[in-house]
Length: 131
Image (tube, rainbow, N blue to C red):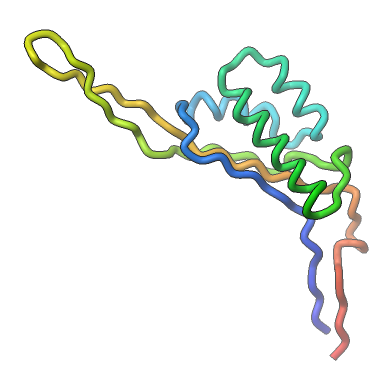
């Protein structure tokens, strides 16, 4: 018997977002494991700069879920949210006597994975083949 599982997860990935991974992780840790509506409310009310790109990613992942997989937005939870360090943009700032002072602008990659919790264990299997 071959069992093919139905995919219950969708994701959105934001790369090269211009902020420190440490600052973005403070916000992402607050939304992990929460429902979609609760996540949007938290991100709208938090006073951090990292909230706006994370808000856009959560919104985009929910749009992917409703358009591509026909999931209801009310049944989604944030199952996985991670922040990884990206490349560091290096610049030189001109200083006195012709010298240059290095400026390092960190970037990060943010991944948001949403899971549909309305599908139970029995509905998770799409096809069952008997051989």
